[in-house]
Image 1 (cartoon, rainbow, N blue to C red):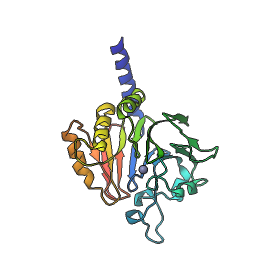
Image 2 (image 1 turned 45 degrees about the vertical axis):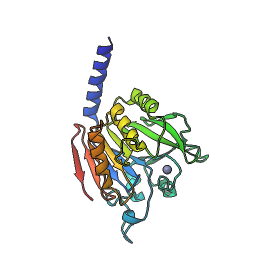
Image 3 (image 1 turned 180 degrees about the vertical axis):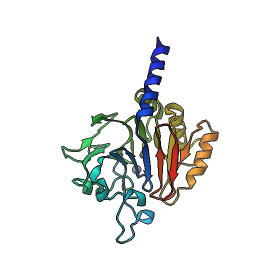
Image 4 (image 1 turned 180 degrees about the horizontal axis):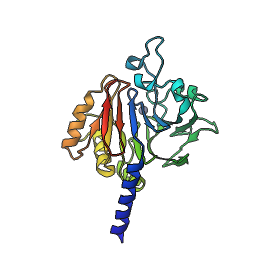
Length: 266
Ligand SMILES: [Zn+2]
């Protein structure tokens, strides 16, 4: 009986995977990523920073240039996710998109305000479902501020953004696995290639439990290449996976329903 249940879940999942529209993943610098699936745009920890994301005067913002421009949003249903309040994860510029998008929803991993239109996923382990997008959070609490990681399921895709989450990874990842089975696109923070490093332990646990098809490793803007060392270390220490990273804000990856990926350099 158990075997039958697992088998039909697997078949259902394969059918769903074949029907889903392609996803394009946009690197927007540091922790900031966007995933576009058909008319939806899922934005994680958007920060418009200095350095490579700086716009040339007069050049409009846009995903292809590693930023989000209001003009691009008018045909999109936008979901904005913020993991926590640190300045490298939250930028008030996101509120300027209101009224520019076809529709826009904001999700915060803590009680960030009192706007009835916003979703405050106050933990532990909050969840929400909006317009057929299912969202679940897990929590941690460093430096005195609450923070979450997001698991988002939309249009047949399962996406995870870690933010700076460093909680009870064994329990929390097992909890997420109960909903996700496996993850399609994961955004994890890169760390040092050492077996006792907490970010290594987190990433290895995540890969072993949630078996992501693709992992996008996050490093500080300008330090992106360090992720290659971390990826090799993971692969040789119990967490074989397909590891990717952005080099320049504006880099993008198109992942089709069959799982084929195409990398587009900015
Ligand atoms: Zn932080």
